[in-house]
Length: 381
Ligand code: NAI
Ligand code: MG
Image 1 (tube, rainbow, N blue to C red):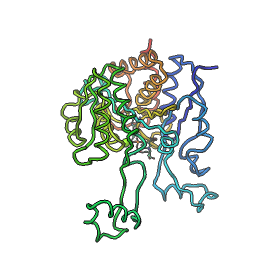
Image 2: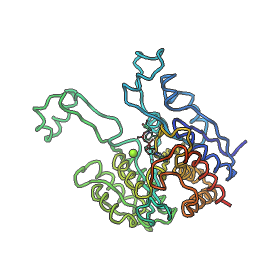
Image 3: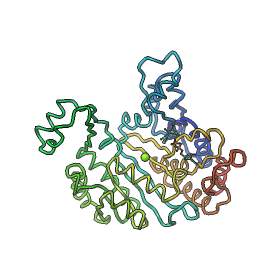
Image 4: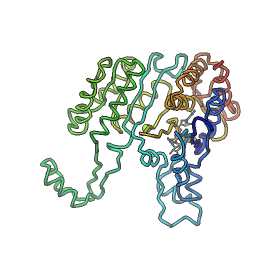
């Protein structure tokens, strides 16, 4: 029996292209793993009315972790129109399988490394090495929202909170409320993971990116918990920065920052900013981590127009694979893969179109995805 059992979900569009590239690198590393293919994505929605069927949830439950390509999502009405005729008019509502998987598997942590590999012409600077820890299931994305706002909700808020009074003249329908729910456990977990990572990899600082001076209760709870937890890590400095100022600092001095910790929405925003500083979608990887499961995916989507052309940049998927290896405790293989990725970028012998800062040429660039993969494999030697 193989040491690891890993769910292999290609999903839609270029998901398959980049996973084929990752597969080549994994084969070269001789990882002792059994990969089990699973179903997820748009075709499943169209034909079965569910982009994340129960058999895929079962697959999660019988594997150690999951490697995920990309999926296609569309707005509600468009999604309904694309259902096969038998499923239309049945009240099926599309919801993103990736958001669904995060919630059903309680993948409470989203970790995104944003490291500049020298030689990448898309780098903002070559000395950036930031890792973002974003809380993945609570906060503004928890989905506790109201529109129109029910009387009961208004009564409760109004009775307990004098600041609601100035909205008294606004009708229920003219008001929308999205809540920002933090739990102490949620705050402690994301902060602790930032500090654990910093300690393990010799990082000098953890920066909490919130806004406690204005959002006193939720951001405040995060900061207060961070101050307590930081005392257990004397070798790591705790820095506190407001999210708006952080955006300026990241553009001004990104090389000063190391580990960033933020709640769901702030983490979503700053991780996109950080990713673009080191090359953007072709280089942005993420790990969704829970207590006993993890799902690894590149940040990019399914880029339908490039599907099956093998012109997309596979490096984001390769970095994603490296994160999976680290999660499994395969530090040596993770390092071998990372060094090979770094050398491939530094040499610049084979590049996908995005690294050359031009539009893709469907014919001339066809096959580049696998050429980059082969170059990474050569550079492992
Ligand atoms: P996208 O990430 O698929 O593409 C955006 C742009 O970046 C395109 O110009 C594409 O050509 C380029 N690009 C993306 N990945 C690339 C790569 N590896 N190498 C080179 N260029 C790359 O985002 P878009 O176009 O907004 O969405 C397309 C579909 O993907 C939609 O259905 C969307 O809902 C879905 N999506 C899925 C995500 C996921 O699976 N987690 C995340 C983002 C979007
Ligand atoms: Mg995002």
